[in-house]
Image 1 (cartoon, one colour):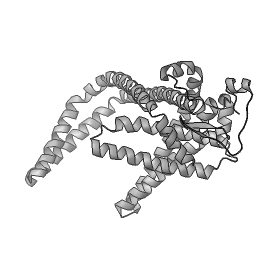
Image 2 (cartoon, rainbow, N blue to C red):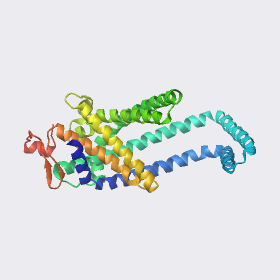
Image 3 (cartoon, rainbow, N blue to C red):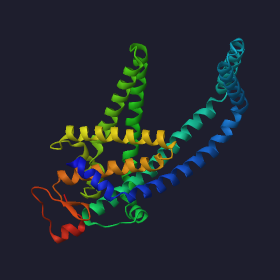
Image 4 (cartoon, one colour):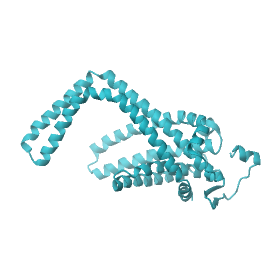
Length: 320
């Protein structure tokens, strides 16, 4: 039922998708402009060698397509020569490369932090609609909850990046062994995708209660962290399996959008993916805590044993 209610809540909050889209586009444009402006001087230092390398590769491919086999050896030697020149140039600019990489990593962390603020605001909007049928403003909710959202992302973003880096290392090692140990390419792709999806679902399973506990449960940062990583009585395997299905659906949706709309569709499907995941987190929390909620303007989901609150608790948001 949680899976079914998630899509009802998602449809009921579909307008949040457009707000997420606009917010994320602004972040990407600003981050991209800053990154390009700072990296451009570094790229210019390699521009002649990169241009020669590009021309060599292009000529190599064109000759291959045209069947000029006799010239392939010369082109191959030229490409290798230019590539070696780039490597030699990089050795003379190690400090610049390190600084550029550090800047890109820092910019990525800042971009993730701002994107997390948008996710927090979107979760607030979904919660307000589920609890009170309130149509809260995106920017207003972001400003109102800026302190809590900022602290949450200061904790969550570094942990998330560390986990993602560990997964990247794992996937790199797995890819190395698959390419050297599995003869069939299709099996290698299957194993690689399976492990990656399991790793993503594992992370989501153990962090899915963090935002709902903060926004709906009003548990505070410490209480929310303790709540999300404590899996006692939370049907962990059921939540994990639901995330597996959601990830598969989201991947299928985004790949289909890329292939059938020449990439235009992901402008809608990517922010919609975040809204779907946030909707599931909220539904999962409400169901487990036995709280009633709206899935549309005419339908209220009521638990088998409904909890009651005093008037003071309700208006203070004390639902834990």
